Each structure stands twice: as structure tokens, then as C-alpha cells.
Amino acid sequence: MPANVLLVEDEERMRQVIIMQLSDLDLHIHEAVDGKQAIDAFENETIHLVITDLKLPKVNGMEVLHAIKEKDPEIPVIVITAYGSIENAVKAIQEGAFDYVTKPFKEEKLRSSVIKALQISRLTYEVRHLRQEIEDRYTFKNIVGDSPKICDVLKLAGSVSNTDTTVLITGESGTGKELLSRATHINSPRSSGPFLTVNCAAIPSTLLEAELFGYEKGAFTGAHKRTKGKFEVASGGTLFLDEIGDMEPDVQAKLLRILETQEFERLGGGKTIKSDVRIIAATNKNLEDMVEEKQFREDLFYRINVFPIHIPPLRERKEDILKLTSHFIQGFSKAFGRKPPEISDKGIKKLVRYPWKGNIRELKNVLERAMILCKGGQITSYHLILNESQEKSFEQMNIDTLIPMMINEQGITLVNIENYCIKYAMKTSNNNVSKAARLLGLSRATLRYRLEKIDE
Ligand SMILES: Nc1ncnc2c1ncn2[C@@H]1O[C@H](COP(=O)(O)OP(=O)(O)OP(=O)(O)O)[C@@H](O)[C@H]1O
Ligand SMILES: [Mg+2]
Image 1 (cartoon, rainbow, N blue to C red):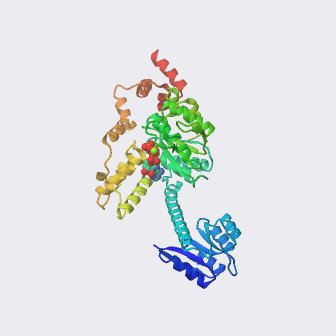
Image 2: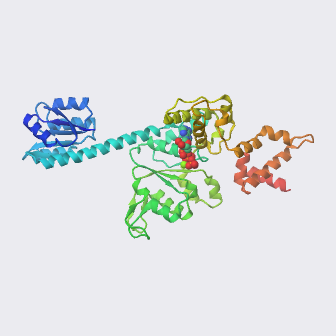
């Protein structure tokens, strides 16, 4: 597609010379003979580059430059000045012009300036377009659900988004922690800065340090050139520390220091680097338990647990299942170029009953498979392939089936049921009192007391 260039020049002969000189470039040139015409043309056409003489009748070139910069600061403007009036050219550059050429100009100078300006204009357009796409994808609006629990989450995230406060997002796998953290960034004053992710799990500590802090050439075998770390590159934006509960202890200590001072050194380098990043961390682990078990530094925990947001599992907000289902079906139908299929009543019941251990990610995958299997017809329960062991364990956990089994003809005392539950909770949480207390909805002190009673 040819680039649209607005050429503003009052002398007819000069316009012809310029058009001739640029004739082998793929351009569509709009001509304007004075400043007023230029500003009108800029409003009515999509212009990628402006070339303007500074000396013009009615509205002069400097005013044209101002008007264009005001409407769109990113459109490059090349100004043409008469030989000997270099101060005007300097002034125009200070006011935001991309480049200047002096009259009479050499052909090469104008051409190379136009080529460079168009490259920049194209990149700016592309970045803008991509950014818009990301912003559309990650707004809070795209976080589907209207259960009171998800509304609370969105309210919290909305209120913290326009601050620099560190956020800790917790929740089971697939609950939308990354989605929420991106939306928080997009809605922050840092949205035009970078959003970078570091997955702290599965990277050995030495590599993770290099990834976070960067390294100097020769810092270790294989460090061929100086490389910036994510803390440095994310400056002005947000750094998303995913799976922070899996970070090894020595890296935890270093992270604590940088969170406190916003300063760090690249590996193998003495220079202290300052960075300005907002931290959002996420984990599916219980960091409080990890602190108690000495697997996570207590000081680091307090440093990142400034504004905790817990995303509840899908089974605790079953009201959202249908909304999410129709959201994903719409999305897949669009991608497959099909009309969105209906789901049978039995299918819906199946979706609502299931415990969704993999949460929203699992729901999305099940629906994608169902979309393929139903071949454009109705989605029935037959197309919804669920994990059998999850379905079974859910049945076993179901209180309606449990109670009749426990209270048989001989009867059972409530104390025995409670003691059984306490012992079971202790066993499944590896004798960790805090974990077991949480499972049972008791305080730790109460559970300790009950355990002593059982032992008596
Ligand atoms: N409320 C929601 N509305 C729409 N899509 C959602 C919602 N929550 C999660 N998703 C989608 O579900 C998938 C999983 O979400 P995400 O990757 O954010 O989860 P996570 O909590 O980071 O999971 P993990 O702990 O496994 O990394 C993504 O495709 C995401 O877009
Ligand atoms: Mg994630």
C-alpha cells in the first residue's frame, strides 16, 4: 500500500521538483498550496508523513507543524527551509519536526529523509495497532463472570490498578491470575510501558538471576555479550513474577533487596542500576504455609503481600460457569468460522456439577474439544469429555452421599464424625496444623485443643 504524504509548498515549480525526486518511491502525494489547505487535508485524509515549506502564505509552516503535532504527535514532519535560514530549521526540530532540508536541496538528502521518516511512521503505526489489540484483549471487561466473588476480585484489582502498589495474586491453577495481572497493568498509568513476565518455577536459580538482573560480558561461560535483565528492561512498566512460590531461597534474598531499594547489579558487574518497576506476583501455593515451613522468606512474603488478591476456584463461583461457557463458545465459533452451537440441558448440568480442578483453563479446553466433536451441531453431554477421576472424587466428597453412609442403622456420634474429619484433615495436610485448620474452618488454637482432646 502506498504511503500517504502531504506536501505543503506554495511554489508550483518546487512541488513538481519534489514530486519528481520522490517518484520512484511508493507514495501517494496530496498537494497543498498553503497552510490552511494543509491543515484541512490533514483532517480529512490518513496521512503518514508531512513535508512542509516553512515560508507559506496565510498560515506559515511553523503553525502547520504545531497544528499537526497537536492532532497527532507521532506523524513525522520534514520541514523545508530556504538556504541561510538555518535558525528556523533548528527551531522546527526543537518543536518536534523529524528532519529538515534546505532549499535548493540535493535529491539524495530529501529521499533518504523521507525513507527514514516513513520507516519510523510505519513502526509507530504497527506498535500502536498491536498495543490497541493487547489493550482490547486484556481489559477488565474481558474477565468474564458476574458472581459476587469475581466482582469482589475485579473491584480490588480496579482500585489498585492506578497505583504503583505491589500486588500478590493467589489462586489455583487456571483461575486467571495472569489475565488479571495483565488487566491491572493495562489499566495502570504504566500501560504504555512494558509488561514482562518471569516464570520463577522450573528455572534453575543461576539462570533466573541472569534473567532478572542481566549480566556483563564474561560473567559466566556463555555470557558472550552484555545483556539486560528483565528488571532493567521493564523499567517504566510492570514486571509479573509468576509462580513466585517456586523461587529458590538464594534468589529470594536478592529479590528482597531489589524490591526494597529498586537497585541491583548485573551478574559480574559492579555498577549499581536503578530501575522503576511495578511488581505483580502470582502463585498457586499458600505462601503463609511456606513461610511457616521455612520454604519462603518471611521478610520477602511481607514485602510482596502488600495488596493480596485471591481468585476463588471456579467451583466456588459456579454462577460464572454458564457465562464463561458462552464466552468461550462465541470465541471458538468465531475462530472456526461457524455459528455458535447450542448446549443440551444435560450438557449444561454436567458442566455445572463438575468440580473443575483445572478451573477456567480446563473449562476452555473441554469446550474447544466439544466444539470440534459436535461438528457444528448441538453440544451434548457426550461431547463434553471430563476427567473421570475428578468426577468420581467429587461424588465421594459429596455430603449427600457421605452422610447416609456414615449414619447407618447403628448410628454414629457427632464427636466421632468430627474426630474422623480432624484426623483425616491432619493426614491429608501432612500433619501441618495451619493447613488442617483451614480445611476444617477452625482456628489453629481450636484445632490444637481438639487434637489434645483426641489424644487423651
Ligand atoms: N474470568 C475469565 N474470563 C475469561 N477468560 C478467563 C478468565 N479467567 C481465566 N481465563 C482464561 O483461562 C486461561 C487460564 O488463565 P491464566 O493463564 O490467567 O490462569 P493462571 O491462574 O495464570 O493459571 P496457572 O496458575 O496455571 O498459570 C486463559 O486462557 C485465560 O484467558
Ligand atoms: Mg499463570
